[in-house]
Length: 180
Image 1: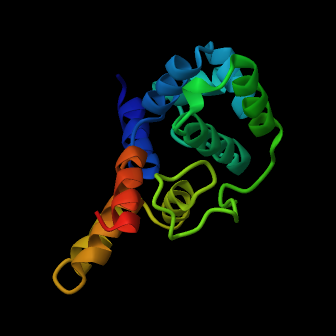
Image 2: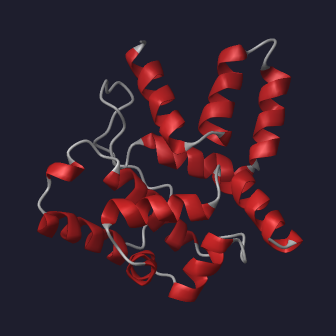
């Protein structure tokens, strides 16, 4: 791996919480798609997806592509996704492909008092997206370190929701909301 590739992977870890290749591979396996199909779903060219996966490029430049990635990740993580017919799964994925919504769009029917784990459109991915647009993972970790002594709960929220992995953020959110 070249220095440029290594640096790009470091930047992806900082900006997205993990290398994009890991995120894309999970979706490829979960959805049973080829790279070209996933690229089309996200609104990327197949070569661009490959470059992001390999670390030849560091950043998803188009906010609509990032939004679709977050929406798809949330959708396939939804309880009941596997129980949907293949046709229904494809219909929902097609809705995401066609969507040009902001990455900060939140389903207004969800409430902060829900005791269920976050579903697509719930705040977890929106919060992560917001944090990751205003600061790097390193900056969020630094802010959390500064807050730790006086505001440990806020520091933990910054670490988990801002700099952590989505699956950990979902578990944290569910734990905080349910008080468990």
